[in-house]
Length: 147
Image (cartoon, rainbow, N blue to C red; front, side, top):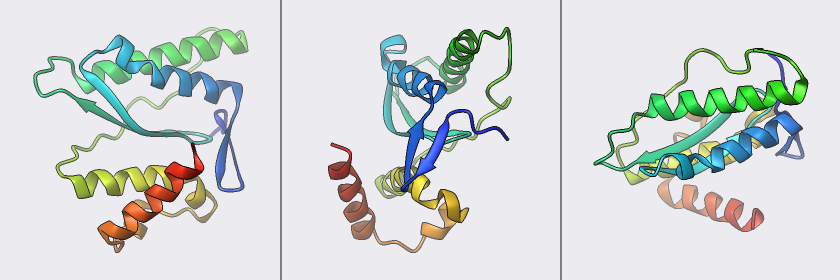
């Protein structure tokens, strides 16, 4: 798997020009899909993690948003590389319905800690014993560090 989006250095992702395109496109999702709100997000060297909230009354589907996101980022990256039609993303994506606040905070934490866990090949299950208070404490530290 190619690491075209950046690299992890000192527990943080350093974005390549391609990673910057991906980051910028993610942040414009709400401008193109008014029923979508973005939440925690991270670009990793070869993949991304992100949370999208859809309004209950929305008729838009997550697949439509992600298809658009993947299409736009692929086109822009191919333009930057001066290539035509090269694939950037895998065909599918992993989705999970977040059903409660604890799960939401847990996934936010996993997203924020992903660069820290990169070299250790850690998985979300490795964080499952954390209490809600510990999750919030770690998230608060990350929020203040990224201001």
